[in-house]
Structure formats: C-alpha cells, structure tokens
Length: 341
Image (cartoon, rainbow, N blue to C red):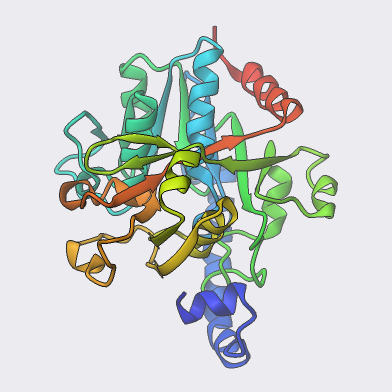
C-alpha cells in the first residue's frame, strides 16, 4: 500500500505532516468541484437527458469499493425484468483507436480497460467505453438497449441520471473524510444524501440506517468456483480447496488486502501474497517471484489482463454480489420506477 493510502485509511503517523501539506490542494479541489457542480445546476454547463433510463453506480471516493459486482448484478437483474441493459464505462487504462468504443469478442483490456472486459465477458451485453458518457450511452441506445447502467460516473454531471446508487466499502468507509489529495474523497459525505440507494460492501455501520431515509442496502460478495485462466476450466471451490489448501495470491485492485482476507476466510493458506496498484498493467515478469509448484490465485479483474501469458497453475476467483430478499426487492422496485416497457 502506498504511503498516501496509509495516511487516508490507516491513520499512518505521516498524516501529521502530509495532510497539512496537502490541505491547500484539497481546498482548491473543493473550490473547483463546487464551481463545476454549480455551473451544471444553473445550466451554465449543459447536461443531457436521454430517452432511456440511466442508472449510475458510483462512489464518492477513489479506489475499489465493489462497483463492478454491483454493475454485473444489476445487468442480470434487469434482464430478468425483461429489459435490454447496456453498460457504459470510462474504460480506465484502455487505449482504443476511436471513441466511443463498442466492445466485441476480440476486445482486449489494453483497448477497453480491465473492468469493461470483465463485464462484457460475464454479462454478454453491449458495453461501450470512452470519456464522453453521453456519446457512449447514445451508442448503446443505437444497439437496442432500453436501460443504461453506468459503471462509475457519479461526478459526470453532463449525463443526467434517473437513479444513483453509491457503493461504500464497509471496511474502509470514507478514510479520513477529507477531499483529494489530503483524503480519498472526490465529494464530501453530504453527497450521500442525494443518492437513491447506498450499497455497503461487506458490512454496514449502525449509523448507516440514519443516512438517506433508510435506503441503505448490504451487499456480500460470494464465491463458488475457481477458474483456470488459460483454459477457462472451472472447479467448485470445495474441490479446489481439497486439492490445494496452500496457494500464492496477487491482486491489483483498490484494496488488495480485501482479496487476501477473502481467500483466508474461505480456508486458503497464503504462502506468498503481493498487492499491486489498482488497474495494474501486468507483465509476465511481475510473477517471477512465485513458485510454480503452488496455484496462483488472483481476482477476475486481474485475470483478464493475464490471459495471454497465463501459466497452467494460474487461477482466478470470480465473485458475485448477493443481497437479502428484502434488499433485492428494494432494487427491483427502484428499477421498475424508471423502466420503460
């Protein structure tokens, strides 16, 4: 974990000199972001309302909070409601030749980014990436989609939205509560009051029910299978554990320790673990440190970037968002209020 993240989330002693140093920049960030929000609210900057409903799944901070599992879950849920969903994303880390870029079976993470590739391969729905989310959404509508799900983009006010779901890491919450770069937040906690739903990943603090008129849900991430990267061979988690209890692990996500803790909670013994920065662009040299006599486990998001050079002992652990029946019904009711039949 980088020093700045330790200051944000771990109360590192460096906060006593680093935070005061960064507070003026955080003040400038607050000023610029406030002016931008005001410009959109007054109509000085134009926003666009589409003729199909838009759901934004985002957060007020940076780093992995669990947005992608929520997006995947919403895609599958809207399908069961008879809708034709499509997903838009910034495509962080991608470098396509033209934008907006519509993914196909030949798309790579180098072109589209890791999360869009994951969503496309998992859900088999149209996925479009690019900085212009309005253009992205318009392309999805041209593809026949009648509901748009935005992976991130909470602060992309140029695109009007019908529902906002804010995902919160139940463990890290809001760190030190400060704006970038003194803290991890892109917007203050006041922004939670404007969301239609708050989705807590992993655990929900007692005071969560007091926020936003009791519209907070609890999401759990569940795993049932382990998949070999280079062959797509699937093994039940229990079978894999019976064969290999000891494994190595890597994670290039917002909070790698969350993945390592998950593996240990499932019963794995981690011989060696290595965290990387979020959206890490892996090369084969990054894995030289691991012995080949043990399986190497990684996240699904990391696996899409390692397919081309994956070894036989490399596996990934896909996870699914799970909600209680009551919370699932809350999601369905929210979607039905905006869905166009």
